[in-house]
Length: 357
Image (tube, rainbow, N blue to C red; front, side, top):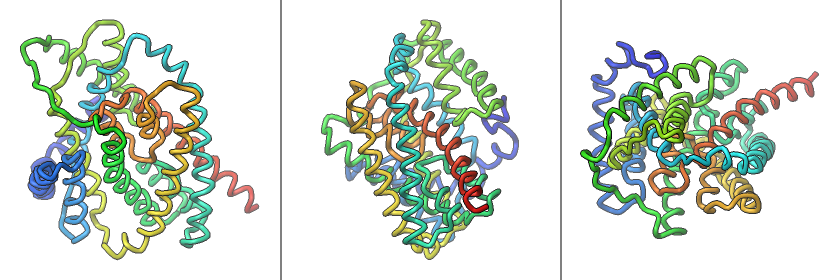
């Protein structure tokens, strides 16, 4: 169970390293400055930009896995508060958006991979890994096994992630001026704190089993299912302080920047233009998918845009929470997206191998 959340001596030790201390020391001031200038999701965008630039300039930065584990559990507990007793009925209504998600992924990989092959010189396998709208971690493992260009795959995904995180909050604020992150005062005395203990224990149990059976995003999905289950059956519920979202934003933003460690500005810039075009194509296809979905579900269009947004599941989930855009709906579709990507990419590779025979 502790292994699933990276609770061991090595990961605990990383919390006290100079690399992580550097990340914290540059992230907090950058978040405060971004917040001062009213940048949407300042606590994520500020740290992301500053940490990315720090890493690309050769400074040593590190985001310990245990830090990420802690905020994913917090996100799961936040999303669990949005789950209602009619969840199963809602999920039946989401079947059509799930089908749309499948076709979105297939069409996206076909179109974007062809673009990368024709205009950027990516090899076939590398283009398939680079065009998938998400699942960077698992795809990097598969890409290494298939002897693809790991640098091109990682750079394409990271550029897409940075663009999504930077641009989408501004789009949401402009399309819906009422959508904003307003922190409420945390009422400590009115809550049953034993419920929080029960929620954490249940979450750890679900995380253990989800990790054991290789469920995608086990930390987030395990906590989400545990907190949702306890809330639906009125066993336990707990509203975390809204200020904890800022902590999640900071860690997630900084973690994106840390992924540029051991990369050079030249390496990133050489792939940046085609990464930008690929991102635009994925976003446009996502907008088409979101529009089609409006004929099947009665949901806020911004929630649909986030659901079909080709960003990371954790980053998009925290955006949905911050702007109160149906986090349970958005998280469900991004977990489904991960499952579909992990299914479709190997199928594409098998088809490619058969065509070459």
